[in-house]
Structure formats: structure tokens, C-alpha cells
Image (cartoon, rainbow, N blue to C red; front, top):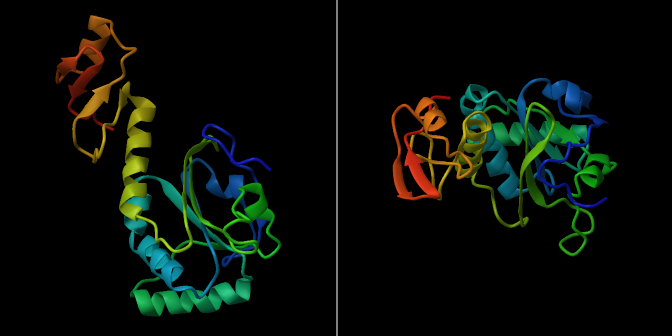
Length: 213
């Protein structure tokens, strides 16, 4: 199938995992979600990534985000690999890993790029909102581990801009000034929405303190 685009409904599926069968939309419920793929079990970069993800459990929980990993290896392999991850990364894997041996989910989410590898998945990340819409896609080559600080930063931005008439500027981090969307021009609405005021750099570039989430 064609690559998923922002705003598309994330395909639903039922697939086995390290904690048993998962029906994706039902499992996600009213939470935000991250689905991220791994080329294979027992690979060095993946091991560090899953360890890093486990260590961020409190950060994901604070943001109402559920995490779901994927590898094309079977469940038995996942269980052995999880032991390795826990031991080598000094953590406890606290999220499920899909066992996509039949490539069902990999096909739905276009995770196998034949010009990179005909059998293993690329390192893709999908952020999915509670309405099951795809809000972010990032694809890394197999040789490059993901930056989970960036993934958290994007989730903070998505959740903030979902409910306020703002966007986040380059290199923005939670707590920093944000940009008022150019379409908002009514002075009374601006005053009501941004009681802390704003700085007009240009008519289309107005900075304001981050609204409360």
C-alpha cells in the first residue's frame, strides 16, 4: 500500500505480541500512541532503543502515551531479547513488542523498504492521536538510533497545539515561547486567548508565553 500520510487513520490490526494478542485500536483506547519498528531482535542499536524507551516510562505516562514496538521475529525470540535488554540496559521493558512474523503490520504501515532491505523493517516512528489519526511519521535508516528526546518534544508540541491557537517554533522545548497562528487576528479573541500578552515581531510572527496545557 502507499505510505501513510499525516491525518490518515492508523490501520487497525490484531497481532501477537510479547504480552499476548493485541487489537491495536482497542488497545490504544483514548490514549495517544507510538508505534515504532525495529529491523530485528538481538541487534545492538535496537537493544539500546528499547532500553531508552523503557527508561522513559514515566514521561510517556505523564503525556498519556502508550508505546508499542514491532519486530518481524516471533514471540519466543522477543522474550529472550527482552531479558537481554533488561540486563544490558539496566531497565525493565514495560511495553509490548509485536511479533510481526507474517509481515502483516509491516505491510499495513509500509515498514519494509525493498531498496534498503527486502526482509527487515526500517526504523519508522508513528505518533497516533486518541482519534486514531497519524500525527507524525519519522523514518530512520537501520544504522541510526532514534532520538527519543525529539519524539517527546514533538508529542509535547502536538498536544499543546491541539488545544490552543499556537504553533511551536524551531528548536522549541516545553515551557518556551510559542507562535500565535497567523489566522487569528481579532483583538478581543487574542486578548482572551493570550492574557499574558504577546510580542509582534512581524504581523505574521507573534510570540507569546506557552499557554497552560
